[in-house]
Image 1 (cartoon, rainbow, N blue to C red):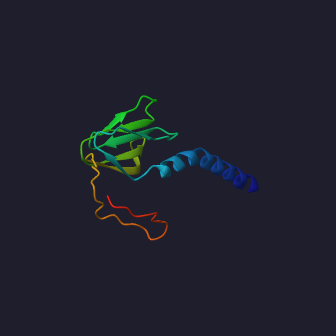
Image 2: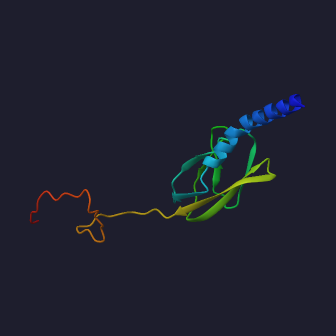
Image 3: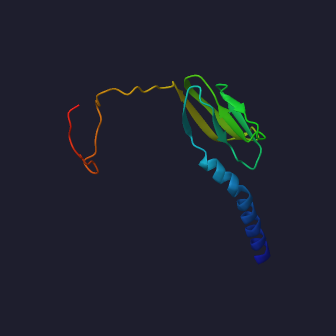
Length: 128
């Protein structure tokens, strides 16, 4: 009886050891990513088991490093894809929000700038 229990415990611990790295990598993947339009960003999926990614918006391109990473490159909009184990069991759904490229132009007056009361030191005043 004790041998069966010990054998089951050892087998369970070995399974946890084998699957632990993949589960940790899967949990570290973000559920939502926001990118600017036209930017290429590598998203690394470092899972130890074979996976299938179903891409509804056609925004993913395979990277050169053996298929472990993908590059997001898309027009503005919201996209989603699902990571599945062997194409059968969905493991995680990931959303990608692509926003238009923003350009900031500095102006002469600061309008709507909020300064914190702590940590601001006025060294002196001068007319411009």
